[in-house]
Amino acid sequence: MIYFILFSCAQQEEIVEAPPPPPKVEEKAPEPPKAEEPNMAPVFEKAEFFNKQPTAQTEIRVVVEANDPDVERVRLDYEWSVNGVSLPSEHRNVLSMGRVKKGDEVLVTILATDGKAESKKQLFLTIENASPFWLEDPRLSGDLNGFSVSASDPDGDPINYRVAGAPSGLSIHPTNGSIKYEGSNDEPGGEYNISVFAEDPDKLFVKWEFSIQVTPGSNAGKDK
Image (cartoon, rainbow, N blue to C red; front, side, top):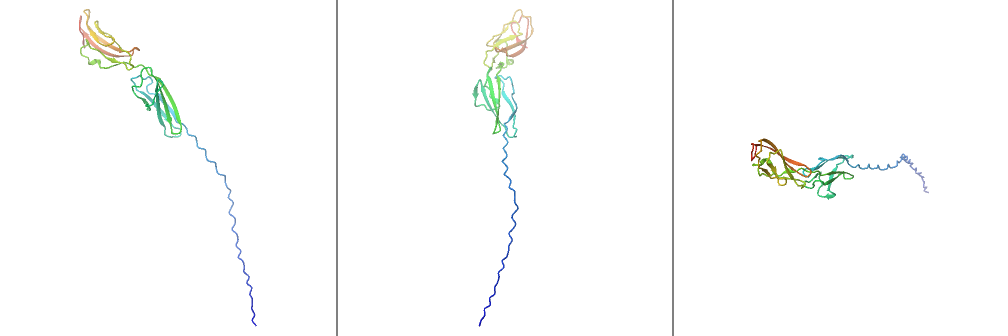
């Protein structure tokens, strides 16, 4: 007889402990985005005409200084107008010569920009009367008798010629500037300091001064 011996094997389960839960992290609410600081427009430190009483003969220049509070680059632009008429070709701080005459009203608008914000400044002036000027230097003249002086007025005003301090018998034509010296039998003789004027209707003038020596009873004069 055969006996079977059965062995009972109990299988022992291995106990594995679960890892501890991770520490609880308190979640912070996201910070709102910082508001962007507003851009500041450039500020004019200085804006003025270099010559505050310009004429048609003088340069019209604007002197400008502008800074940006945000320390950004500032660009300057200029818009010119004369008697209300815009001059689109003029964008510099200097107005081109030949653009104005006496009595014209000039307006310049200065624009300062940093690319985001812009500041504006306007300057105004009236063009003053300009003095006549000699077309040729009278000192280069030779014989005084029959010599003609010639002047021009930048504003186109008529010119009147006159002489002061002249001996008897010396005269000048008021419109063409021709000098005539006939002399005089009553001439006492001596030295004369003569002034020749070319003046406009507003009494602005250009002057030529010279001296002549005249002999008594002379009928001719000559430069000293």
